[in-house]
Image (cartoon, rainbow, N blue to C red; front, side, top):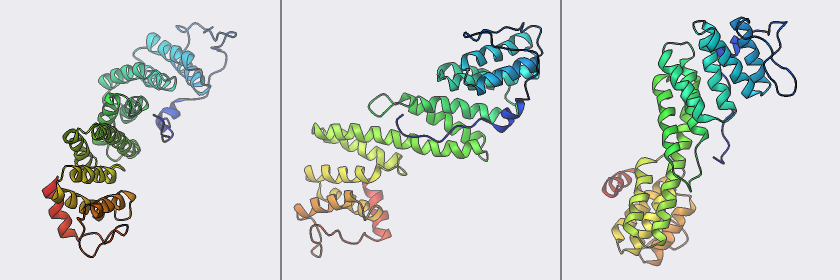
Length: 289
């Protein structure tokens, strides 16, 4: 995605795992960063801490090898469990999102009661989120991200991860609404009005908290006028005026109604009237959508 995203921070509990590196062992051997110590003879703590150091130094490929060494040589140690989660984080950092998801899925399956299980679900959701494409492309990854983020909220509603997930869910919904708007505009340009109406109504009904609803209501008003559906145009414009009275979309819709002589006698073009009262809005919303 091109939109900026909130910074991603590792779980505090994971950071606490990174104890000071024990002396006497070096993972670096020249320019190629080859492992120089015998992993089978080093303690799991040493192997793990070296992996954390490599990760902090942005040597992600090396960090992954080091975390894998913990898992391979000490599969039943608690360090191996932590190493698996950190391996998933390292894959995320080097933007190998599919690999990270596979590791995290395995971790979640094997360790559902782990103290950092919430972080595992959250990191998995971030992997999908980072792969969201622009609205010109297929939105399957956006739907995957939305599902994974919602799972974080459902499973860990009071966590910090859930708070951030909710923000990202809003962004995902805005992205999906943007895609619906793009398709709807294309249909409208092609004079495929029924298809366009369906897309714009989807935005109004399913993505009510996004920034695209005002335009969707305006486009519906516009199409209803083209089709001669005057009552639907007036009602939709009323909904638009109630919810977005100061928007340019309402002003445009109002002026289109004026051009078609569909305004009350007290209205004048270019000066939208006060929005309708709540009872009128409730009635028209239910009758249109």
